[in-house]
Length: 473
Ligand code: GLU
Image (cartoon, rainbow, N blue to C red; front, side):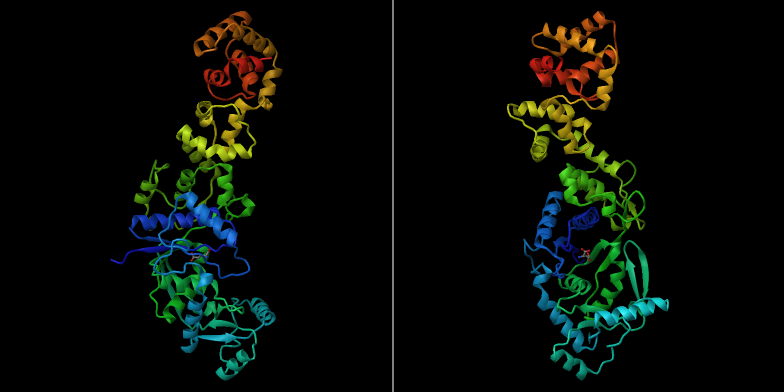
């Protein structure tokens, strides 16, 4: 059996978004499941739009997700280099071979000419494709134009026929070559077109399975034609369904910031994001909502990937994230929270590590992101700032009497323990003849500025006697 080899091939032209991250994850899971190799290849042939900052950020995001690769620009491997901008001579060589075989030709059409021809086709209700003007140019003329330095692209010659692709997710897809038209494989600046470099590298890097977003499905017939012309064995293809927003439109900036960076910054845990992404378009079975990475690998199969679009559901991601936060050790959470605390300007001076971890432990059940967790922690660190619901409680009649009575009773206790709190509340209850919400809400609101939060015993323990008395004024 041939060992499986898959690759994640991002173009560093922007942030890694949820869709790309899901593609990377599925490649990773497939590689691990089949005992294969996961490759990272940077597709930076578009010189204008590719940026090293984006490449670095993508690499960081993948590392943060924990999707480690065996071969890549930083790791090397048997098919180095793994950055396309360093492979131009390989593409040039392949293009010369196609030219020599008569399978590609120079095209001297200008942008204007192409645009005019395209508009004409649209007016005639024909599929827009290259009209073939330079296809049969006499080689000598073509060569002399080149020698004169006339700007040109190189096009692949598409012959009549059909291309059939047995896609591992979509099933059999058939493309009519007549609709494709001769396409550009080398741009006028001399760089290889994305689609060309992509399939050449897949072949040379011995990629066995191309798992990618289905926005690339329409490139596949072109890539199969290139493969055949270069006598490569094409990889197997698996096109993952699109991810859509709740409004059923393809997920994009319109749905808010869907970059992985923004999720990281908001405080989603990598395990939660992995778990969430793994379920986008694939079902692991009834009740298998939260799975470890090993279980995800075990349960992964391309045959299980649904052909229909997956819907990005923020509530579900929040639910998964809150699960991971709730089940995370306070010590680990403290480490993860550090950056978020600094960013939020929270001053932890004078707080011991134990205190911080106790506080995290007390509030972790209430947050669905780390930045929310910071907000909950601030309640015990910053001055009390009552929210709207808390203000409404404070405005209720009798609330201040309750707070005052609690203060007077707490003053008699030193220290304030959980048992003493029981007796204090009994006394306030007897003194004012109030009970339930009317008794406990004013106290909670005065101490935390919130109507919800950890048990009162934990609130008291975290604040300590002095701070409790200070807040009950
Ligand atoms: N560079 C392409 C992209 O970022 C990858 C296409 C592929 O995976 O084949 O969309």
